Image 1 (spheres, rainbow, N blue to C red):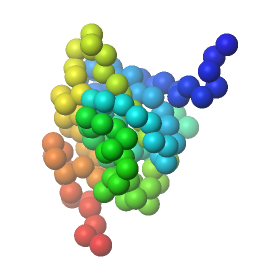
Image 2: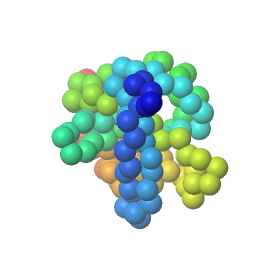
Image 3: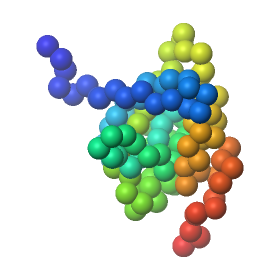
Image 4: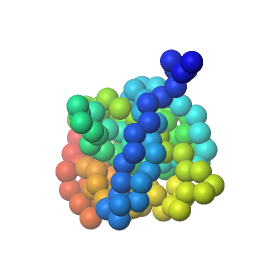
Amino acid sequence: MKNALAPRIVQIEDNRQTPYRFEVYGIDEAPSGRNVVYMFCIAWLVGYSPLYIGRAEDLSKRLANHERKDQAKARGASALLVHRPGLLDYVQYKEAEIRLIQSFNPSLNVQHNALGGLFLSTS
């Protein structure tokens, strides 16, 4: 029998067609994990739009007081996606974060983003 509490899994590709497996959580959930990539996303019927992409050595600590979470929620984010690279994954979490930011240009990211900060409000 399937665990009713298990997160849903989605696959997202970067602009090099490298696939990443993401667990889907509600934006206010607090999953734990080490060496992960996470995204605050708008959830659509057919996919997700990342507003912020980051990486964390300790996800629980990183999410506890995240500086972009409230901004993402104000822009419509309702989902937290978490990628936990396995030992056999071609791209590990630090490189995966950079590739995903460069692929999606999320509006709340400044680093590694060609459009970084262009749409950030100072208020």
